[in-house]
Length: 493
Ligand code: ATP
Ligand code: MG
Image 1 (cartoon, protein in one colour):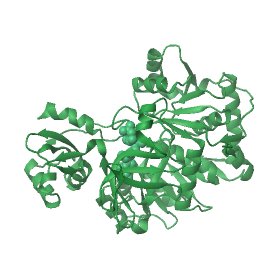
Image 2 (cartoon, helix red, strand yellow; image 1 turned 90 degrees about the vertical axis):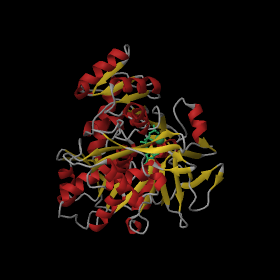
Image 3 (cartoon, rainbow, N blue to C red; image 1 turned 180 degrees about the horizontal axis):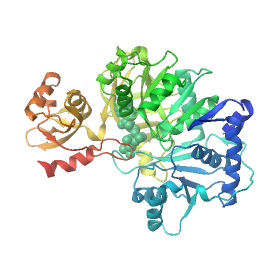
Image 4 (cartoon, protein in one colour; image 1 turned 180 degrees about the vertical axis):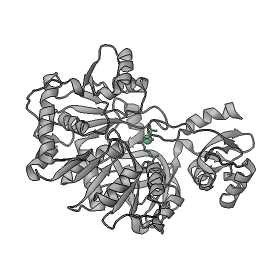
């Protein structure tokens, strides 16, 4: 097979549309030509310290213009980038650095405490601080990207077990960007707001789209709902990527005001979307695109367009054009309406996990990725994600999906958030058990909440008990860790 190559994305973009805005950060806008020039200089400095083609470098960086430059510079040098989640502990980071076989870490002063802890664990390992790089340096760089080559190694969030290093090739990123554009279209005035972390695929994929499309990105270090709303209302932002908590906060801040017509996409992903939130957005005319995706699919792979947001409420939509989807149970493709494992394929789907042949073989069969998520398709092919296979509760032979119960619980006005897990039961095998955090100052009795559940849930789905608690266990990606809830069960009952 001949190798498929594309011209170096940022270099090519700077050649094709040098004066278009690439990134706005802290009030300053950088054109593609400026970004390319900065990247070339950064590549020279990194080469001067010994960074070279073929190796893997880990990066621990904030959302910042300098970080964007470092990432492109590493691509220019032909270095595989291990994207580290900066919310992780030094111990977790050290594990990922070792596991990924990165030969050095590029970071910045603002992580000095974590870095010193990492140095205690990984003695003999080079840490380069962005602030301490040499002043100058020149180097040759790649003018072509081979689509089969590894661009990034990104660890999964570790919600269901230990994080796994997902290999993302240039081809994966390319097709993810193309698939998204075939779905959303592209307008000259598009400006994509990036407040999601660039170490996560949600943020990194925006940076990739910027250079591939020639599109402006407004990058912020930290999400702030007021700033995000103002950017949409006054600063021409047309698309924003959010997770549920961000959207919740934006709606709260929005109050009675609304968004201008030019705002065309609220891209919602990362996890299940509570139905009541979608209803509020519909009422306000906010164009929410629900998405389903994972690190392994290099960003979204299934999307629901706003015109279906009410008729297909709760659905994650249909696959992007280059991708395919099936529901599989006991080795067979399911009929519509029948639940099974969500299985996907497409040029945006990973080749596998780094150094994890077993996990790769388990997850990928003949080019199809078994996601570990359960769901079903309706008659028209719309996907409904039910839950993770590992969190499924089987009670008296019936499948019970924790997410469905959490959805009902969190609709109660006194409930801030809820997590559900299964607990052993002599009669039924397992029964659901709820952990609930109330809004500050709110009061609610267990019996009252269970009665409330009875209005919307079949008897076998109603939690056996409700345990009121202060918080729910979450990982570095803020995802609910139901396996930790399981551990609490024994202690709290
Ligand atoms: P790990 O694989 O280590 O357990 P993780 O799966 O949480 O971690 P990510 O790749 O960040 O790591 O998350 C992808 C997962 O998020 C999906 O497999 C799915 O379970 C969940 N998810 C994403 N979008 C949706 C959605 N629209 N509805 C329900 N779940 C979703
Ligand atoms: Mg996963």
